[in-house]
Length: 311
Image 1 (tube, helix red, strand yellow):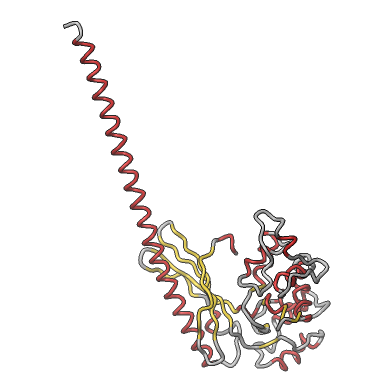
Image 2: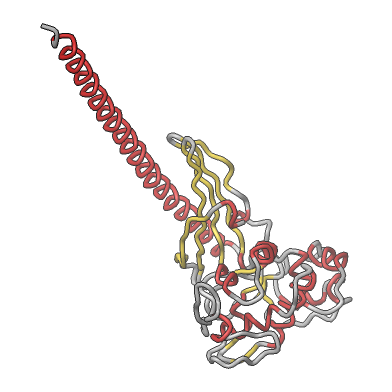
């Protein structure tokens, strides 16, 4: 009989231990279930967001196709340049805009048919200088995209520089596939990349600059010694939108400079659709690069999700 209280105590402790283990198991199962629910919810929202992206691409395709039929030039006063305002959709909202990429500088213009395009090199150097970035960065870009493994430029770099990095990698020795490749080029920092990003893009092949859509910063790089005020005057030239390059060069704001006609146009083929979709606490940002042929056919070149830090 003396052992009875001790046995009861052991039994009570055993029961409490079993209850504790059972409680932990239930909590663990509940937590796992909540995580599964949240994961499934996020996947469903992502799938729904991508469907909205496809819808916005269809919208942009129709706008660009219609504009190509109605206009023989591309300018910032046309329908494609008007942003789609924030619009309510099921469980959230979306907004988007179309940007003319040919109002920027195509980095792949630096090398044309295997040869360095000196005029395009000068323009990019001027752009870097006006942004207070080192013009010598162009040397490293040229070595990155030329077809050989020789260092041909004073501030260039090839495999021997890149293979010493951690992790090591090799120079591309081909055209830029995406502007983000610049972060791999010797001398390019994240801060410099973000500063340059609004004024550049890449597409395969040569793409002239559209003088109707280029901003003052880009227009300033078309010739030496163009001041910021002159560039602003060219951007706001009274002849805009220009119907051809001859009219552009005759404009009073332009004729005072030594801008040449090389690599300039008043029409565009390459556009960027950027957008943001908000669903609950989720913010989904994307960009789609589109090409419109001279016959009006609009095709998708690439599509990617982007982060707010991308710019």
